[in-house]
Image (spheres, rainbow, N blue to C red):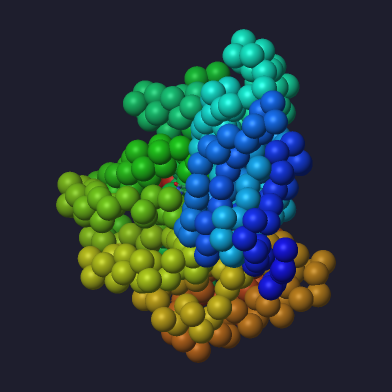
Length: 407
Ligand code: C2E
Ligand code: CA
Ligand code: CA
């Protein structure tokens, strides 16, 4: 075998790429040439298949960590690209447990029907036992079952109106007044606990439920916004710019009816979209900049305001941000939290604010827990602040009471 790079390997005609019974630590994509897959039984070679450019061989051992079940030989000069186990293991780590469970199941089913020196019943028994003892298979199955159950439970929770939006006030430094509030999801679990967003959203994102939950959140926030005008009659005249901000998940945006749904929510509740701020994380922008730009342009055309949430926490690039139609950035709370303990945090906060100003973006400082932190972000030039020092997130009736006093 002649190696041209650690990924590309060349086999002359007749060379064996791997032998039956060998441990299988890589799979091969055939770039050029042709190979034959064979087994030897009682001294007789049996050809099972032939593959050529574009085909993949050796994948079974990579998936289930079993020895090679056949020999692969080059029938003509053949060039392959190697997929190493290390790469495959990383890729499998990122795979959704339901998909991974399916891949592993297909493997077991195939192994049971593949040619084997064992009798049919011995072969069945061997693979059934192997599956039972396979920790990866059992782990994927447990995770898949958990997710399916969680999806069911969350879906019923939406139908049974167990979700509630809490609101956390956002205060402007210009007049020290509350100028808006962020909607944060909570689950009033029937067993009495109030479950926070950090536990709900990641599960919803791993299931299709993020769509239903996301639509529910947008619609409830719009409904609450129109309630607010009734509950606080002066709000529109006294605070014509008062806004509600809504968090969007990347997984929500991939659905093609996202824009239609958000449009119907604002129409149904008669909400002016310029009073809604949509919070997205910078990772959404960086993962697929082209579709992010497309969707942001459409949201801006509809009149929404857009904020980049958790800024500084991901691949932050101010230059990149400039290319997107954005109104606000929210400095990630971790910088405020470590203001005094990590020497770079203070510099980063100041630089983010300076750069944001330079490209005409407004800045909200998040996670402000002390008066000191509030004074510092104010001094650095942030426009608004949000955090436990000013107010915790609270249910809608409580926020109405607070706004009655504070507006
Ligand atoms: P986030 O968007 O960064 O929201 C701010 C989180 O910080 C909230 O946690 C809030 O309760 C918490 N927080 C507020 N002030 C302070 C403070 O002074 N100190 C500290 N340590 N924390 C503070 P929550 O509500 O548990 O939400 C966690 C995350 O879950 C949110 O982070 C957001 O990414 C996501 N999330 C919340 N609600 C929604 C939602 O309706 N839709 C989507 N897609 N995601 C949501
Ligand atoms: Ca947020
Ligand atoms: Ca945030």
